[in-house]
Image (cartoon, rainbow, N blue to C red):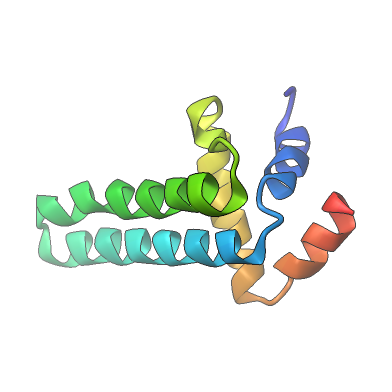
Length: 104
């Protein structure tokens, strides 16, 4: 993939299942809470738990629900950016429309 736009199209295809998106959302939210709590308390354990929640939930969603391989294995940076973008689109209620637009 040459750019994030191409990656995003691939990423959306890999997240068509609404349950997988909900699992990702939960993991990303918990990872953000860990980072925030880590900043507030300067507790290194909180920072260590952030990727456990973020990747743990995402990988479960891919292997158990979507039945595909997480994009983070080959594109970790773009995958993180896409996770955050998807999180924002879910919060604003626009992710389902994005899936319909791209993955149809």
